[in-house]
Amino acid sequence: MGELYSRFAALLQLSLIICGTLLFVAAHPKTAELVLQKALVTCSPKFKPYPELEYNF
Image (cartoon, rainbow, N blue to C red):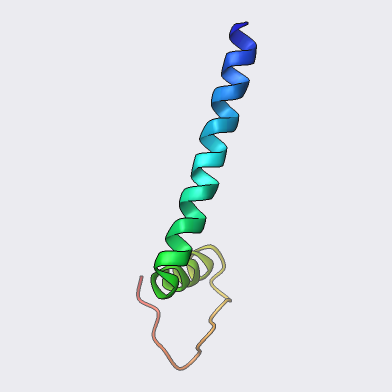
């Protein structure tokens, strides 16, 4: 019974994270775009969507 509960809790947590992310993107598309660009630039230094801008993160 404990294993079933922990699986359900993990599934619920994952669904809440996904729904929260989708709601945030829907409510703040520009902020979400900037966060995604920052994450991509941080993870991949070669990725620069706008080469003319300075990336000082």
